[in-house]
Length: 403
Image 1 (tube, rainbow, N blue to C red):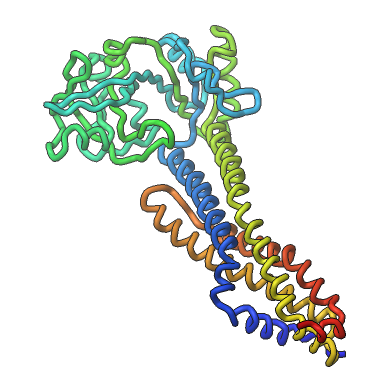
Image 2: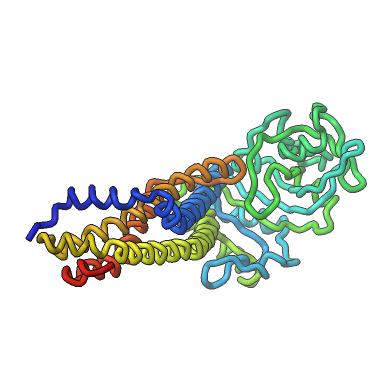
């Protein structure tokens, strides 16, 4: 009996597989589509998570955030109903928090309202954020032009605004915006600054579309003069959990617990990442159906190959080939077919990710490539076992008689 030589078996498998290149390519098509889809979806999921983390880091990370309404459910996910609430905080709450909380840098109230901003004949919808001078300091607002409104303008309720980069460009085009007047509602506001580009919020309005004005000024032009959110800038990251508890305790002296939410940015990141992970897994699972279809295609073509090569198998067995050698060769062929398709899929998925990255955050990782490669090997083995076993169990006498 001739013992199986893995090197010779691999050589023979490659020769057999690529004898008919068209059939090999068509057989691998399901694997190619499946792996390309999986790589793209995982890359998009990774890119989104990285993008969101970068966005939060760029806006500062040492914060305890208070919002009106219960925005998280008991499972830790987002509570959509809680986002729509008429409840709001007041200036007394801000004063109380400043007085009672220790180891903090600032308490930053904010109110917001959708508005239409106009310059000459151009009208654009925007989000007006009424806040304080501390917002620019602790939320790391970098100015492209001009300045942020100052304490004096805040106290005088001056009609001044700082524009996000996108709303500034849309309104002013090539006109220099500083000291120009923008109409919001029935009032004219002087533009004192333009913020550098920050980026989007994935699903919500872009930060670059926001318009900022002093808190008291905003109250004069908003339907609701309440405060919808309060950011507490914490001095040390390790104090965040303690300050979060103290904040909840202070607010519970005045309001029911279902009226507000207190959380840190890690809570938001955790909830968003959970949603993205679930979505990525679900979509990847759907894409993986192509891999199963591709595996079935490989199994069918290998069964056809066993039938076509029956006499060859019989001849090899007659001259002393081990059944194990026959089994391994057909198994190698199935794995090679799968890995061949997977390699093309990885290449196409990577190219697709690079192309997508120009319009959407996407990121190929070594882990996703190794996962795709491993899955291809597994598909080849799983769907190659049946044809390989059939080939190894053929009787040499019957095989040599086969026409």
